[in-house]
Length: 123
Image 1: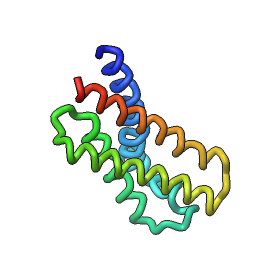
Image 2 (image 1 turned 45 degrees about the vertical axis):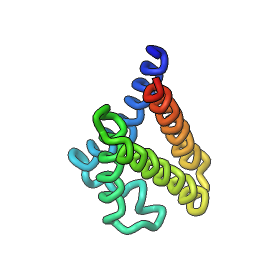
Image 3 (image 1 turned 135 degrees about the horizontal axis):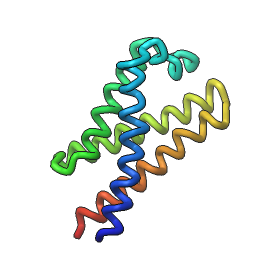
Image 4 (image 1 turned 45 degrees about the horizontal axis):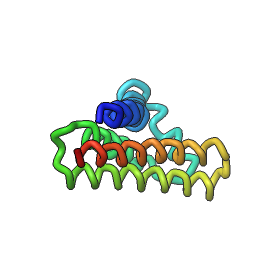
């Protein structure tokens, strides 16, 4: 049980940093770089702001233990969709293998967090 909690919290903390803190930091401290990742893919300017807000809300939902189960499930799903679509966007537009692999690595971490969340809940 303790091992499962440690794995969950380590992986979820990495997700919180990568999907929540870094985008929010960009938005607050260097707003000129907000569209740097989405503009080359052809998305409108407002899309980056929406994506940041949704990612931050998602990692808040998965990291707080008192979040209702249904909200947590939707947060995991939303983050998974955003990572899958990031992979597809990079695969179709710039075909940069590094940009294509990064969302898949983060998706793998999200899956690990999801699996261990359910392992903790069952006990």
